[in-house]
Image 1 (cartoon, rainbow, N blue to C red):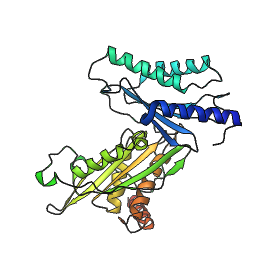
Image 2 (tube, rainbow, N blue to C red):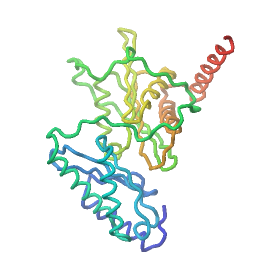
Image 3 (cartoon, one colour):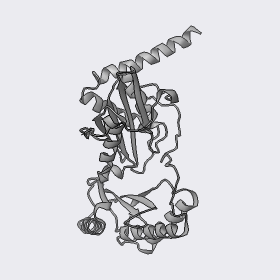
Image 4 (cartoon, rainbow, N blue to C red):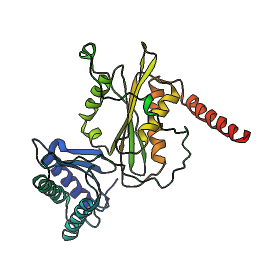
Amino acid sequence: MAASDPETAQRQIDEIDALSSIYGDDWCVVDEDERIFCIKISDCLEQPKWTLCLQVILPSDYPASAPPIYQLNAPWLQGQDYIALTNSLEEIYVKNLGESILYLWVEKIREVLIEKSQSSDAAGPNIEKITEEIDEDNEDDYSLEYQPVQEDTIKTLNFVISESQEDEEQPPINHGNPISDRRSTFQAHLAPVVSPKQVKMVLAKLYENKKIASATHNIYAYRIYCEDKQTYLQDCEDDGETAAGGRLLHLMQILNVRNVLVVVSRWYGGILLGPDRFKHINNCARNILVEYSYTNSTEESKQLGKNKRVRKDKKRTEH
Protein backbone atom coordinates (compact mmCIF):
# COMPACT_ATOMS: atom_id res chain seq x y z
CA MET A 1 0.00 0.00 0.00
CA ALA A 2 1.75 3.14 -1.20
CA ALA A 3 1.59 6.25 0.93
CA SER A 4 0.09 9.40 -0.57
CA ASP A 5 3.36 11.37 -0.61
CA PRO A 6 7.05 10.70 0.20
CA GLU A 7 6.99 12.72 3.43
CA THR A 8 3.98 10.82 4.82
CA ALA A 9 5.54 7.51 3.73
CA GLN A 10 8.77 8.36 5.53
CA ARG A 11 6.90 9.36 8.68
CA GLN A 12 5.17 5.97 8.70
CA ILE A 13 8.48 4.17 8.21
CA ASP A 14 10.13 6.15 11.01
CA GLU A 15 7.23 5.45 13.40
CA ILE A 16 7.20 1.72 12.61
CA ASP A 17 10.97 1.48 13.09
CA ALA A 18 10.73 3.29 16.42
CA LEU A 19 7.90 1.08 17.70
CA SER A 20 9.71 -2.07 16.62
CA SER A 21 12.81 -0.90 18.49
CA ILE A 22 10.89 0.07 21.64
CA TYR A 23 8.63 -2.99 21.94
CA GLY A 24 10.80 -5.71 20.41
CA ASP A 25 9.10 -9.10 20.15
CA ASP A 26 5.74 -7.67 21.27
CA TRP A 27 5.59 -5.73 17.97
CA CYS A 28 4.44 -7.87 15.04
CA VAL A 29 4.20 -7.20 11.30
CA VAL A 30 1.05 -8.96 10.09
CA ASP A 31 1.14 -7.72 6.46
CA GLU A 32 3.81 -5.23 5.47
CA ASP A 33 2.33 -4.48 2.03
CA GLU A 34 -1.08 -3.67 3.51
CA ARG A 35 0.55 -1.91 6.50
CA ILE A 36 -1.13 -4.12 9.08
CA PHE A 37 0.63 -4.36 12.44
CA CYS A 38 -0.10 -5.79 15.85
CA ILE A 39 1.29 -5.25 19.32
CA LYS A 40 0.70 -7.25 22.47
CA ILE A 41 0.28 -5.00 25.50
CA SER A 42 0.23 -6.15 29.12
CA ASP A 43 0.10 -4.69 32.62
CA CYS A 44 3.60 -5.94 33.44
CA LEU A 45 6.42 -7.84 31.77
CA GLU A 46 7.18 -10.62 34.27
CA GLN A 47 3.77 -12.03 35.24
CA PRO A 48 1.10 -10.27 33.19
CA LYS A 49 -2.49 -10.70 34.33
CA TRP A 50 -4.19 -8.35 31.89
CA THR A 51 -3.24 -8.37 28.23
CA LEU A 52 -4.64 -6.85 25.07
CA CYS A 53 -3.70 -7.05 21.41
CA LEU A 54 -3.90 -3.81 19.41
CA GLN A 55 -4.10 -4.37 15.65
CA VAL A 56 -3.73 -1.35 13.38
CA ILE A 57 -3.96 -0.67 9.66
CA LEU A 58 -2.16 2.47 8.53
CA PRO A 59 -4.00 4.30 5.70
CA SER A 60 -1.88 5.89 3.00
CA ASP A 61 -2.57 9.38 4.41
CA TYR A 62 -1.75 8.57 8.05
CA PRO A 63 -0.60 10.48 10.04
CA ALA A 64 -1.08 13.60 7.93
CA SER A 65 -4.86 13.54 7.56
CA ALA A 66 -6.30 10.16 8.58
CA PRO A 67 -6.31 8.08 11.77
CA PRO A 68 -5.13 4.47 11.98
CA ILE A 69 -7.84 1.82 11.55
CA TYR A 70 -7.67 -0.21 14.71
CA GLN A 71 -9.06 -3.26 16.47
CA LEU A 72 -8.78 -4.15 20.15
CA ASN A 73 -8.57 -7.90 20.81
CA ALA A 74 -9.07 -9.13 24.38
CA PRO A 75 -11.64 -11.65 25.62
CA TRP A 76 -12.43 -9.54 28.69
CA LEU A 77 -12.84 -6.25 26.77
CA GLN A 78 -16.60 -5.80 26.47
CA GLY A 79 -19.37 -3.33 27.22
CA GLN A 80 -18.39 -0.19 29.10
CA ASP A 81 -14.71 -1.19 29.28
CA TYR A 82 -14.57 -1.28 25.48
CA ILE A 83 -16.44 2.00 25.04
CA ALA A 84 -14.27 3.82 27.59
CA LEU A 85 -11.02 2.63 26.02
CA THR A 86 -12.03 3.44 22.43
CA ASN A 87 -13.18 6.90 23.56
CA SER A 88 -9.77 7.47 25.14
CA LEU A 89 -7.93 6.44 21.97
CA GLU A 90 -10.10 8.67 19.79
CA GLU A 91 -9.58 11.57 22.16
CA ILE A 92 -5.82 11.13 21.84
CA TYR A 93 -6.14 11.25 18.05
CA VAL A 94 -8.25 14.43 18.13
CA LYS A 95 -5.76 16.15 20.44
CA ASN A 96 -2.83 15.20 18.19
CA LEU A 97 -4.18 15.70 14.65
CA GLY A 98 -1.49 15.21 12.05
CA GLU A 99 0.91 13.59 14.52
CA SER A 100 2.11 10.00 14.96
CA ILE A 101 -0.01 8.58 17.78
CA LEU A 102 0.60 4.83 17.99
CA TYR A 103 3.04 5.15 20.89
CA LEU A 104 0.51 7.30 22.77
CA TRP A 105 -2.19 4.70 22.11
CA VAL A 106 -0.02 1.82 23.33
CA GLU A 107 0.93 3.59 26.54
CA LYS A 108 -2.65 4.63 27.20
CA ILE A 109 -3.77 1.03 26.87
CA ARG A 110 -0.95 -0.06 29.18
CA GLU A 111 -2.07 2.55 31.71
CA VAL A 112 -5.61 1.15 31.62
CA LEU A 113 -4.31 -2.41 32.10
CA ILE A 114 -2.19 -1.39 35.07
CA GLU A 115 -5.20 0.35 36.65
CA LYS A 116 -7.29 -2.79 36.20
CA SER A 117 -4.53 -4.93 37.66
CA GLN A 118 -4.33 -2.75 40.76
CA SER A 119 -8.06 -2.50 41.31
CA SER A 120 -9.32 -6.00 40.44
CA ASP A 121 -9.02 -9.58 41.57
CA ALA A 122 -5.39 -10.71 41.64
CA ALA A 123 -6.32 -13.67 39.45
CA GLY A 124 -6.99 -11.37 36.50
CA PRO A 125 -9.74 -11.75 33.93
CA ASN A 126 -11.59 -15.03 33.48
CA ILE A 127 -13.88 -14.39 30.55
CA GLU A 128 -14.19 -16.73 27.58
CA LYS A 129 -13.30 -15.29 24.22
CA ILE A 130 -16.31 -14.46 22.06
CA THR A 131 -16.64 -14.15 18.33
CA GLU A 132 -15.56 -10.93 16.63
CA GLU A 133 -18.51 -11.04 14.27
CA ILE A 134 -22.26 -11.46 14.55
CA ASP A 135 -23.93 -13.59 11.91
CA GLU A 136 -26.23 -11.41 9.85
CA ASP A 137 -27.34 -14.35 7.74
CA ASN A 138 -27.64 -17.90 9.00
CA GLU A 139 -28.11 -19.28 5.48
CA ASP A 140 -25.04 -19.49 3.29
CA ASP A 141 -23.95 -21.40 0.20
CA TYR A 142 -21.32 -23.28 2.14
CA SER A 143 -20.24 -26.22 -0.01
CA LEU A 144 -20.43 -28.84 2.75
CA GLU A 145 -23.58 -29.06 4.79
CA TYR A 146 -22.74 -28.24 8.42
CA GLN A 147 -24.06 -30.37 11.25
CA PRO A 148 -23.10 -29.78 14.90
CA VAL A 149 -20.73 -32.44 16.13
CA GLN A 150 -22.32 -34.67 18.74
CA GLU A 151 -20.66 -34.47 22.14
CA ASP A 152 -20.39 -38.24 22.52
CA THR A 153 -18.28 -38.51 19.35
CA ILE A 154 -15.63 -36.13 20.65
CA LYS A 155 -12.74 -36.93 22.93
CA THR A 156 -11.23 -33.77 24.37
CA LEU A 157 -7.71 -32.73 25.29
CA ASN A 158 -8.44 -33.20 29.01
CA PHE A 159 -6.50 -36.42 29.31
CA VAL A 160 -3.78 -38.11 31.33
CA ILE A 161 -0.58 -38.71 29.36
CA SER A 162 0.57 -42.29 29.61
CA GLU A 163 4.22 -43.19 30.14
CA SER A 164 4.45 -44.47 26.57
CA GLN A 165 3.64 -40.96 25.29
CA GLU A 166 6.10 -39.01 27.41
CA ASP A 167 8.97 -39.18 24.93
CA GLU A 168 7.04 -38.38 21.77
CA GLU A 169 8.73 -36.20 19.18
CA GLN A 170 7.53 -32.84 17.95
CA PRO A 171 5.65 -33.49 14.66
CA PRO A 172 6.65 -31.42 11.62
CA ILE A 173 4.38 -28.46 10.86
CA ASN A 174 3.45 -27.38 7.34
CA HIS A 175 1.96 -24.01 6.40
CA GLY A 176 -0.53 -23.42 3.58
CA ASN A 177 -0.90 -20.51 1.22
CA PRO A 178 -2.82 -17.59 2.74
CA ILE A 179 -6.19 -16.41 1.44
CA SER A 180 -7.03 -12.71 1.70
CA ASP A 181 -10.43 -11.08 1.42
CA ARG A 182 -11.37 -7.52 2.38
CA ARG A 183 -8.31 -7.07 4.58
CA SER A 184 -8.84 -10.34 6.45
CA THR A 185 -6.20 -13.02 5.96
CA PHE A 186 -6.62 -16.77 6.52
CA GLN A 187 -3.81 -19.34 6.63
CA ALA A 188 -3.89 -23.05 7.44
CA HIS A 189 -1.24 -25.05 9.29
CA LEU A 190 -1.08 -28.85 9.29
CA ALA A 191 0.75 -31.47 11.35
CA PRO A 192 0.57 -35.29 11.48
CA VAL A 193 -0.46 -36.37 14.98
CA VAL A 194 -1.09 -39.76 16.61
CA SER A 195 -1.82 -38.67 20.19
CA PRO A 196 -3.42 -35.78 22.09
CA LYS A 197 -0.01 -34.91 23.52
CA GLN A 198 1.30 -34.29 20.01
CA VAL A 199 -1.69 -32.02 19.40
CA LYS A 200 -0.69 -29.96 22.43
CA MET A 201 2.94 -29.92 21.31
CA VAL A 202 2.02 -28.61 17.86
CA LEU A 203 -0.30 -25.93 19.26
CA ALA A 204 2.39 -24.77 21.70
CA LYS A 205 4.96 -24.64 18.88
CA LEU A 206 2.63 -22.61 16.66
CA TYR A 207 2.01 -20.10 19.43
CA GLU A 208 5.75 -19.49 19.68
CA ASN A 209 5.36 -17.70 16.34
CA LYS A 210 4.35 -14.17 17.32
CA LYS A 211 2.44 -13.61 14.08
CA ILE A 212 0.31 -16.71 14.64
CA ALA A 213 -0.11 -15.89 18.32
CA SER A 214 -1.42 -12.44 17.38
CA ALA A 215 -4.12 -13.82 15.06
CA THR A 216 -7.68 -12.82 15.92
CA HIS A 217 -8.68 -16.49 15.84
CA ASN A 218 -6.74 -19.75 15.68
CA ILE A 219 -9.38 -22.35 14.85
CA TYR A 220 -8.37 -26.00 14.96
CA ALA A 221 -9.64 -29.56 14.64
CA TYR A 222 -7.96 -32.94 14.75
CA ARG A 223 -8.81 -36.59 14.12
CA ILE A 224 -6.74 -39.51 15.41
CA TYR A 225 -7.64 -43.09 14.54
CA CYS A 226 -7.33 -45.57 17.40
CA GLU A 227 -6.53 -48.94 15.84
CA ASP A 228 -7.20 -50.97 18.98
CA LYS A 229 -10.70 -49.56 19.53
CA GLN A 230 -11.39 -48.86 15.84
CA THR A 231 -12.71 -45.43 16.68
CA TYR A 232 -11.66 -41.80 16.30
CA LEU A 233 -10.24 -39.49 18.91
CA GLN A 234 -11.28 -36.03 17.74
CA ASP A 235 -11.91 -32.50 18.95
CA CYS A 236 -12.21 -28.94 17.70
CA GLU A 237 -11.82 -25.37 18.94
CA ASP A 238 -13.57 -22.19 17.72
CA ASP A 239 -11.20 -19.76 19.48
CA GLY A 240 -13.96 -17.17 19.48
CA GLU A 241 -15.19 -17.70 15.91
CA THR A 242 -18.52 -19.33 16.78
CA ALA A 243 -19.13 -22.71 15.06
CA ALA A 244 -15.94 -22.50 12.98
CA GLY A 245 -14.24 -25.37 14.79
CA GLY A 246 -17.25 -27.64 14.36
CA ARG A 247 -17.43 -26.83 10.66
CA LEU A 248 -13.74 -27.56 10.28
CA LEU A 249 -14.07 -30.92 12.04
CA HIS A 250 -17.10 -31.75 9.91
CA LEU A 251 -15.05 -31.07 6.77
CA MET A 252 -12.35 -33.45 8.03
CA GLN A 253 -15.02 -36.10 8.70
CA ILE A 254 -16.44 -35.68 5.19
CA LEU A 255 -12.95 -36.04 3.72
CA ASN A 256 -12.35 -39.04 6.01
CA VAL A 257 -8.89 -37.86 7.04
CA ARG A 258 -7.07 -39.36 10.00
CA ASN A 259 -4.06 -38.70 12.22
CA VAL A 260 -3.85 -35.02 11.39
CA LEU A 261 -4.29 -31.64 13.09
CA VAL A 262 -5.36 -28.59 11.08
CA VAL A 263 -5.16 -25.07 12.48
CA VAL A 264 -6.54 -22.08 10.56
CA SER A 265 -5.35 -18.64 11.63
CA ARG A 266 -7.45 -15.62 10.84
CA TRP A 267 -6.27 -12.03 11.06
CA TYR A 268 -9.36 -9.82 11.05
CA GLY A 269 -8.97 -6.72 8.91
CA GLY A 270 -11.82 -4.56 10.19
CA ILE A 271 -14.47 -5.51 7.61
CA LEU A 272 -17.17 -8.07 8.46
CA LEU A 273 -17.20 -10.97 6.01
CA GLY A 274 -20.39 -12.70 7.16
CA PRO A 275 -20.73 -16.34 6.01
CA ASP A 276 -17.78 -15.92 3.61
CA ARG A 277 -15.39 -16.31 6.52
CA PHE A 278 -16.45 -19.95 6.97
CA LYS A 279 -15.79 -20.64 3.30
CA HIS A 280 -12.28 -19.21 3.57
CA ILE A 281 -11.53 -21.18 6.76
CA ASN A 282 -12.58 -24.46 5.20
CA ASN A 283 -11.05 -23.73 1.80
CA CYS A 284 -7.69 -23.11 3.52
CA ALA A 285 -8.06 -26.39 5.40
CA ARG A 286 -9.17 -28.37 2.35
CA ASN A 287 -6.32 -27.00 0.23
CA ILE A 288 -3.61 -27.97 2.71
CA LEU A 289 -5.12 -31.44 3.25
CA VAL A 290 -5.11 -32.00 -0.50
CA GLU A 291 -1.59 -30.59 -0.86
CA TYR A 292 -0.18 -33.03 1.69
CA SER A 293 -2.15 -36.01 0.35
CA TYR A 294 -4.55 -36.53 3.22
CA THR A 295 -7.37 -36.70 0.68
CA ASN A 296 -7.53 -37.55 -3.00
CA SER A 297 -8.69 -34.29 -4.52
CA THR A 298 -10.62 -31.12 -3.96
CA GLU A 299 -13.13 -32.15 -6.62
CA GLU A 300 -13.88 -35.40 -4.77
CA SER A 301 -14.65 -33.52 -1.56
CA LYS A 302 -16.91 -31.11 -3.40
CA GLN A 303 -18.74 -34.04 -5.00
CA LEU A 304 -19.32 -35.59 -1.57
CA GLY A 305 -20.98 -32.41 -0.39
CA LYS A 306 -23.00 -32.15 -3.60
CA ASN A 307 -24.19 -35.75 -3.34
CA LYS A 308 -25.28 -35.14 0.23
CA ARG A 309 -27.39 -32.17 -0.83
CA VAL A 310 -28.90 -34.19 -3.69
CA ARG A 311 -29.88 -36.97 -1.27
CA LYS A 312 -31.42 -34.43 1.05
CA ASP A 313 -33.40 -32.80 -1.80
CA LYS A 314 -34.60 -36.25 -2.90
CA LYS A 315 -35.92 -36.98 0.58
CA ARG A 316 -37.86 -33.74 0.51
CA THR A 317 -39.52 -34.59 -2.81
CA GLU A 318 -40.58 -38.01 -1.51
CA HIS A 319 -42.71 -36.50 1.26
